[in-house]
Image 1 (spheres, rainbow, N blue to C red):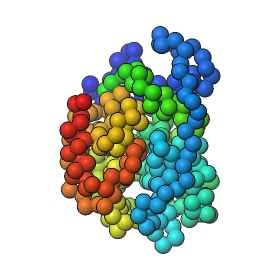
Image 2 (tube, rainbow, N blue to C red):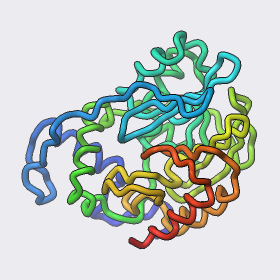
Image 3 (cartoon, helix red, strand yellow):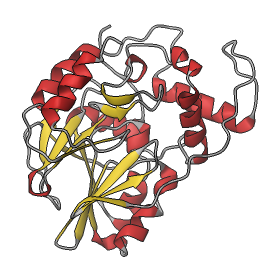
Image 4 (cartoon, rainbow, N blue to C red):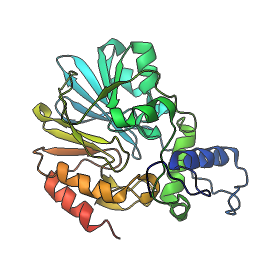
Amino acid sequence: MSEGTRTPDRLDHNQELYQLSYAHRAGRQSTDGLGVLPVASGPEMADPPKQIVPGVQRLGSSLVNFYLVEEDGRYTVVDAGMPGYFGQVPAAVGELSTVAAVVLTHAHADHIGIAERLRSEAQTRVHVHEADAQLARTGNMPATEGSFLPLLRYPTTWRLVAHFATNGGARVPRITDVTTFTDGAVLDVPGSPQVIATPGHTHGHVALHFERHGVLFAGDALCTRNPFTGRDGPQIMPPAVTASTEQALASLERIADVEASHLLVGHGEPWTGGVRAAVERARETADR
């Protein structure tokens, strides 16, 4: 499917998830023949920050991760989770004035949640690849490869829907002003990450290598736990939330030889078995 093409009977994945979030929260009948939408047992709460390595903290919840990187008392937020996570940041850093930058691996809703609030309240600059800048500003999603509907058979999908509904995922603020970067840039933010373009999940998706901290942030180039199916282990994201599976698989080679003690992802636990091993596992499971 070419960029910008959408089959008439399919919404983009964020719109589908937002509509399901509204329906779940209201307990109303679905409009797609599924009947009454199932109700999860309760909201998935945000977790306390966890130190991954000195200077790197994991925030968010068991379903959606975002991160803090500290250098000389100043912080970079890597991805921005869900709107309901905002309170985790001042709790972790103290003064919001110490948050110098937000750097996005991509501009999907569960990665930009608190970015606009940090920008407006703390004058934090938000950085995103130029190919995802329009998505960050407008939320107008390009087409994805597959329908969201097959994922509804998994209880974990409904858990994620409930999490969106209770953490502001149905109304994620768009980012009014962004600073763009391109492949290969070394960003002038705390930690000085190098940008590695990994398009596929979105057209402007990137990985971020914080060499001095020994970590590689892969965003959703791969995950270590599928937030929809619940399957563990390194894998690419499902076609329903991916612009091009073929391109996403090809992009994995761009990070395979990065030396990092920890591979950190948007969904799932940190991976410490080597980046190349994670890439190989993701390729092996791509057709399952």
